[in-house]
Length: 158
DNA sequence: ACCAACCCATCCT
DNA sequence: AGGATGGGTTGGT
Image 1 (cartoon, rainbow, N blue to C red):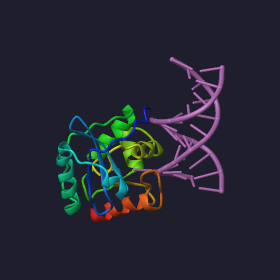
Image 2: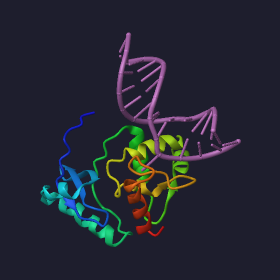
Image 3: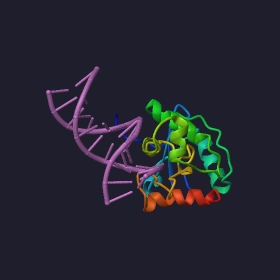
Image 4: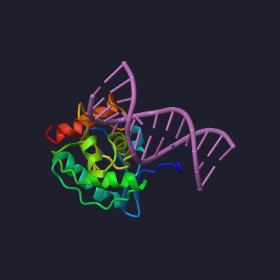
């Protein structure tokens, strides 16, 4: 897979740090948590404004429903999982196992697909938890990355 | 192109 | 604690 230099076209400030946006012909393709220094030297382009506005709304109102066009690039299985994630409303959570059952797969495979999610927050992988415990986030089961999952869940009332 | 081995944000006993 | 699990990735041929 091409590890092409990721270029952020917009930056959104948020309570959990700056968020970098990558777009592809006006559609959101990737979202990443970035460092403050990275944020400083990233210009924002006009087409990022719609995404930016909606993220700001979400951070002030966790019930905000995103209405954005997304570019989801992944294997067929990953896309199936991600499309399921989008159906989970704010305030609700599901488990890796339940999702796996719905898809006729296994819990660990679902976890793998969640980890590969290119658009966290908007594709709400944080709403998938383990049957026992919270599971992980961005490849981690503890630490600052994982804390973001806890923050998002708390933001949504958990 | 295939295959084996290895990695996991799990789950059950 | 240990085993089953299935999708992805990597490295070999």
